[in-house]
Length: 96
Image (cartoon, rainbow, N blue to C red; front, side, top):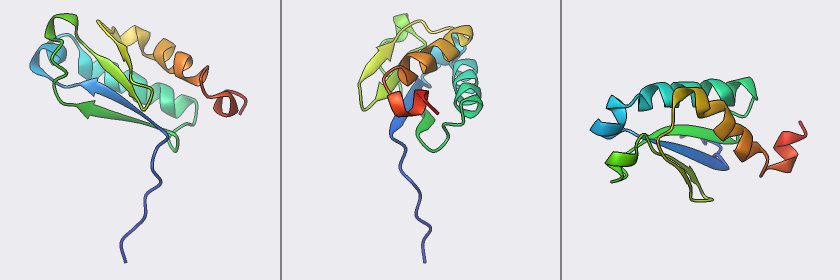
């Protein structure tokens, strides 16, 4: 019998294209994952690598789905603020 995995309510995609990686997208993803864990949101928010988002001059790119919110030129130190902005849209998560 296959395991059933709970689908995340929100997915944060961090561009993993060459240009974005050169501009520290891996560190951005790491910091986002740390912030998700700090807020105990592993069941609601997934941080994943995304294919090249074709905005190479504006990278690293972070996209939040399903809201289709996009951040450009993201620095690792901005990761927590991105998650805080997402939490502001999820009242029940922010109240926990």
